[in-house]
Image 1 (cartoon, rainbow, N blue to C red):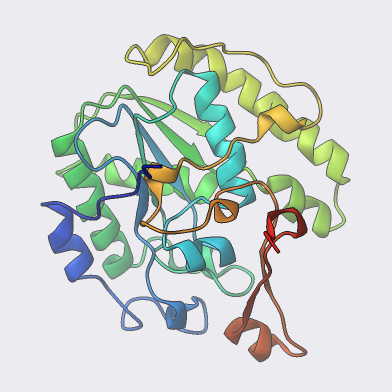
Image 2 (tube, rainbow, N blue to C red):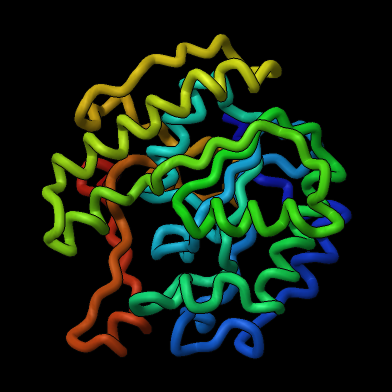
Length: 272
């Protein structure tokens, strides 16, 4: 049985992944630099019609070495399918490294070295793709994109911009106690519904007919989509692309949790 996989980083992206900032730009108290940078997910062959900008990688992304693979990725994948995009996308994050601690992203989003490298990616993606739309996930991503459009490389970029609520807003907002999980989900899905018509008009090059089907007030199973095999490095098992959670940060202390990711194969994926 043949298997698809991500072919890696062709020019000009090979130069970007060979020359990335480390702890000198991303301070260790605010970023998990020890796990290394995670660059993208999706097409780098010039066929992308939608650019997605996320925030930062989490534990699932750290293992698979591609962004937006866990819960946020599954929800984003489902959102893209509603606008008719199943393969013609490319995704990058606002930050190369996972944010550590409260406020780390806000404090360093516009740091010169961080922004300069991010803008090099955006410049390259703009040059080598014909985007119909940009979807930014959360305020950090929207601000990063907007800042880029004021630079030399970003000026005149005319693709439609849909700034939508971050896919894991319900988890983060309800954890603070300011809103219930159900209320947060309803808020997010109303925001996503509001973005669908504009994207439906803007994205004229689709992989399949766009349904633009509105979400309800709560997530249902069909709102999550499996990450395509072609997006990930060769040989990763299927369960790493699925909708079950298989990675968690574990430990008795904050330092232990920072240093430890525990991987467990889902029970229904064990062949023994």
